[in-house]
Length: 326
Ligand code: PBG
Image (tube, rainbow, N blue to C red; front, side):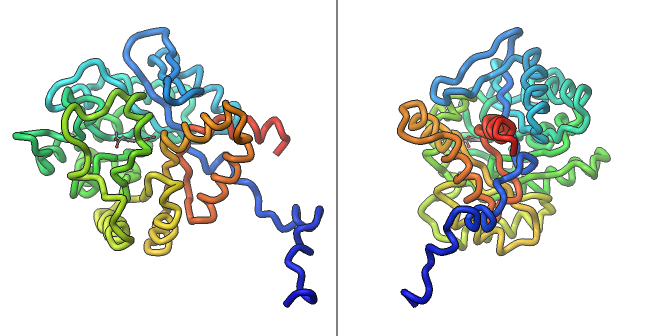
């Protein structure tokens, strides 16, 4: 008790540094990359300053920059011009994502390449599945997801990341991959994914906002308790997922901790678009110091149990560490 014990003693210079755990290392980070149709173009995403969409021919250059700063893994998101009711372009071998994966794996074989596996960027209605009479059909959608996953694996993706929250998607994709001999391809499942307002800027970025309705029939309610989160995580464990994910991150750090403590698998956290844009907007206005803010947030993810952090800040963070000799 005070005054014999003084909590401030160990916060003095020198001691404090000694007791600090290390900053999050760059190898823990996964960098999202948006690929769009066309050639020789880069577009900044208005609601995500500092994040760009790249045509396939511009992707390599960006990835090279990331490699030079020590980024070890990326996750691709496709933006599609070709849209139809069943998202057929998503599994086309000549699709933007498939091409980008092949190029990156050829040039940088050690880069760990993941591919977001969903229909919403490829359907004309913007939903994550096949729709009939206003209903997103779960089981019909699985077959389409299997084909997308196989096309990514054939292109050389290391990680398939199904994000559509269809029931049974992990088991279905695992079977499909194994049947084609892709038994080493990893499934990182968006297991605990909330129907969150924090995805707003992403839907701008990927042009994937639903044209009618919302994602509440498949994404989890932010207002349920922990049981639903743990149940979703355990279901994916039983379906042979290799890595689980909690998304979004900041408003769900407690969920991340509970999930991590409930499973024996690695858990990724997705520091989503809205979280990025909040920090970015405040930084641009001079209201927050961006580097300190991101470092603090990343460390919070690690403390809550994240094994992998997926973040739009990844490359900036890697640059800051390099500039500060860390
Ligand atoms: C679905 C997908 C979304 C995000 C990642 N994968 C959008 C959604 O569920 O509506 C959101 C990522 C972010 O906000 O950064 N393909």
